[in-house]
Length: 352
Ligand SMILES: [Zn+2]
Image 1 (cartoon, protein in one colour):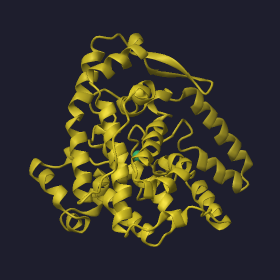
Image 2 (tube, protein in one colour):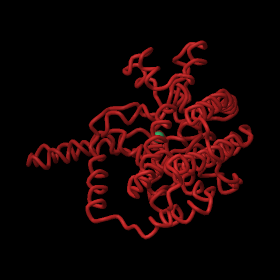
Image 3 (spheres, helix red, strand yellow):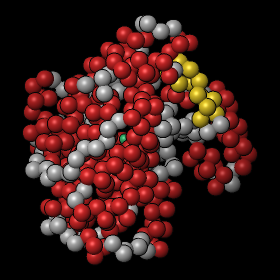
């Protein structure tokens, strides 16, 4: 779920230009950016609230943890929440980032689809080129890779990395549980349903998740992390048909002006799926969004716990008083600034 807004592709260019002193060109670009603002595609195509789901999932996962971990995570709950969206924010600045959020299962034949979950990253790269894998997404393998890294961070008692990686893995796990992250038709663009990505994963949770039951019980150890990541992806993919079919069915019963409405967001009026359409769709999905959010929360807690156990259950009470040093804070700030540069034109997901 990426916060993209309408500045896409324009911010870095004018920053670079202004920095190089080409004020005149800079002014032209700023004007064209403004023009773009006025003529931009409706904002609902660039969901601004995808942040909401990720942040809620990371935050709630903290409450699944056992007492030995809970105190530490609770004391950093704001960090874990706020940074739940980092992976989306760096998608345009870090070349390797985009494929980590999805997998196009429909790109593979039925027989290959059965085998993929059994391949380690090393094995799969021997059979399929890395280029091709990246084009169609690598989320289940990446979750496993993150699991390894977080375990290492616990082993080294490296607080900064524990926090960063906990936030990151939470993001990838949540993405893996979203049906539209498992298909080439990720934003309904192949079936004339553009916008459905943000509708499902952003608009619906924001409208209805206050009434969801998020009590998912206690985190449990995951014996085979890669298998678990694949299970999540396959389960999400099994829900994909209803995501698309119900929206199409419902659309045939709604006129365009009833299907969409206008919302006020941060002082801006944006086109959005109407409340009525959203409610009807949400009912048709029969708690699907809630189920997937619950599955994400549980899985995030399970993975955090598993990393900690595999690292030998380090005493987190000893790390409790740790404050990030000035150098660490500066490094974080510098890194986040670098994400503003939209260097790569990656697939938009819709944009999440
Ligand atoms: Zn994502």
